[in-house]
Length: 390
Ligand SMILES: [Zn+2]
Image 1 (cartoon, rainbow, N blue to C red):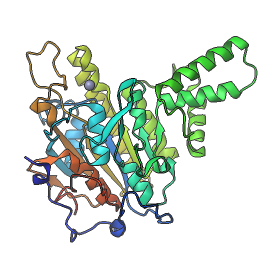
Image 2 (image 1 turned 180 degrees about the vertical axis):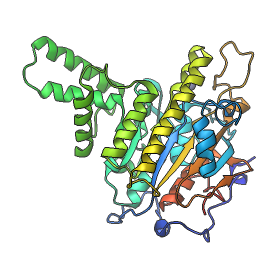
Image 3 (image 1 turned 90 degrees about the horizontal axis):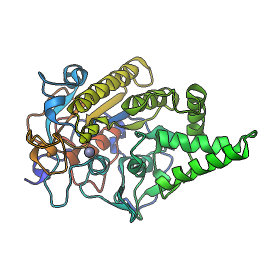
């Protein structure tokens, strides 16, 4: 089934919740239209990631994410049958799924470096770029929050090639980025012994080697101040800050308070530790993301900047296999049906309440976010989800 059979284009006559919807991006290679103030809602895109199955997340009786299923899904549009299309060359994995979400396309990526085959960089514009090209939004208000041990996800802030690119990137918050900040600061501070300086220089060189693009560009002044406060609170030893997906929740909630992002993607990932063979790592990690959602949404519900002006989009990068006979269950590289089966929960101002009782394709997520924010993802393959808007 072709994905366009799943969705119907965002009707031109759609009752639009936002006056800004009239603003569209034209040719993606055309220069920016600066000076357009963004007046739409904030959007927080949560990748319920590391690959999760419907069975452990949205199955009402069996869920390990009760807050997601029982509190959040009823708040808006619940899409229990979101699918990753079975196209030639589409693999159900984390970088791929994340870039499907960010570009509204399949296979819009290429290896970022010949020596690092697991690193994909987008070859089509990402939501970050579309948004910042359409509106005058500073980089620190468009954020990607990443985990600490997925350097391959450092590539997602902007695409390769001759489209929008680096000028429209998001800022990235991750422990990797903090370490780049910390080592730069420490090397500039006085009082280091020669041995300490050498050790720091080596640490920094290792960090820079993770992403061949290095530390370019440096974070914006607002993000520098964010890291200064983070360092003040958690110190230099890395022992005091939360770890794993709890770290992402900490980064994301601090960012919401301090940077006030208009669009933020949070890339949760820890259910993927099941690759090592222990199913309880998987279900426990789902529960940890559910707790993270509770913190993010509670903060948004309480803060006047976010309350009644923030749309949440929660969806996995990919599913996982359902073969109970596999030596290590819950893998996602075998192209099984269940690895293609995901879901989405979308709620906030202007979003309809109800269950979408038909299949929707994963490539619909980016156009739906774009429609909510008032721009067009001109290079997307999918269309905004019919019925998601009031
Ligand atoms: Zn994986």
